[in-house]
Image (cartoon, rainbow, N blue to C red; front, side, top):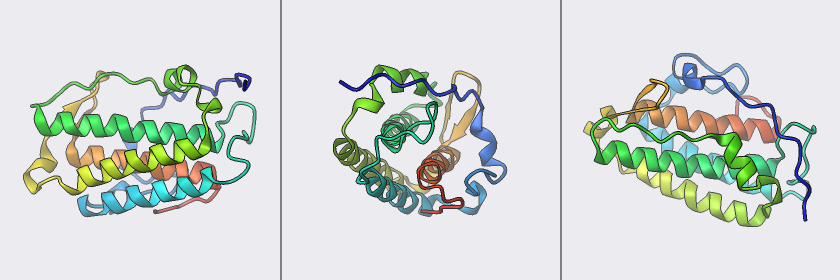
Length: 183
């Protein structure tokens, strides 16, 4: 049985600012991408994670309170699932309110550190392809449909897609140590 690691410091930032300016940590500029870029960037990030999860050190944390590549892979898998559900709500309901999702609670409850890298890579590949295909199928008029988080942040399908892709690209940067990864 894998021992429970120290929990990372909770990330309490509101990352929606990445829709207005480039991320200084990973170099991603959401204003530089359009809807047609989202599926390819998603697939590229997922492929990068599959390669990282195949490394023999995928379970190793670089520091006691920093997620391992495996934990980031679990998070990215779950981001794909959560955002796919949000996208489907936006496409089928008028201005839906998204359910809250606490990524830190998910990491602990789902024991990210104890999962198997090859299984996570497969699950991430499926979840990533599903959302990449869903974004590829969005029709022109649907990009302006809206949805809301409980904190008041309002997204269109377009801004949700760019916010989502930043999350994936940012975490590829986290596990690769390379800034400015674009997919």
